[in-house]
Image (cartoon, rainbow, N blue to C red; front, side, top):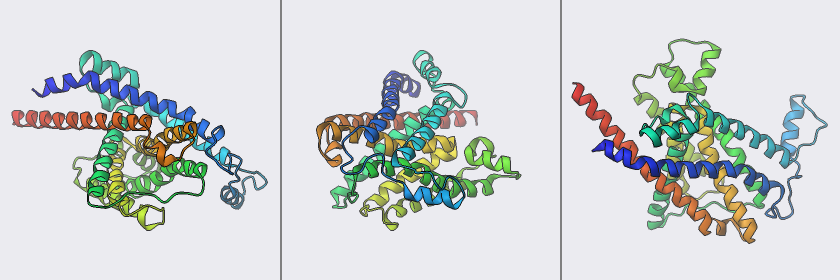
Length: 328
């Protein structure tokens, strides 16, 4: 019964994964268009000076006379994400197309052999759970809103920057170091860095409860930080961000730092790049763009993919439990 469910979901699952994958790839040039060619910027353009970065570089003795602009910072971030995205396509064992062909031809869900499949799977589950939380909270009169920023271009830059900073702090430091201390039986600097990059693959993790406890605590702290540190979010953001933090924390724990960053990149840059494209083409606000049929279609694609992903997860869990019982 369970095998039939898995097989029947193979083609629609791979089709949805492929569409989302292509949308993600397309978001790279779209984001560049938004920064360098769109009219969302009002009085600020990509030539807006990044004085804070100049000050930091001057303090460490790098290029005190150099002038850094918003466009420079965006290209740097854009390049980092492109490198991480390429890593996700090609590894860790098989590239994306190989795993896709394996599912379609043989019904083998070897999704652990490639980063992109768990990235899109858990990203879609994150979108699904976030949507459920938002609707549930709105039913009880709790809103999930962020105060508007003074400039859309600066907001887009901020949401592009946030995944790198937040993943380094919340996943790399607050989860990675405790996980290393809990599960490592040896220490060297090289092994420490490798363990932070891919905890599950480098540490001897037999019992997951301690790791899950750390992930949940840090996820709650991640959710609270959106409210406490003045990011402009309403109280409703706490639950949504906490669940998102727990999901990304699990992805980091299980698959590594690069997949965690790309999922966070998808929730920020990927979504907002299409939002700002629609806003620019139709000459209306980003708030209106998120209710546009095209952006809504992307959200529906992710929600449906999230539902199928959960069905596959639950079905695989039942099959694994049944196999254990039969062996006993």
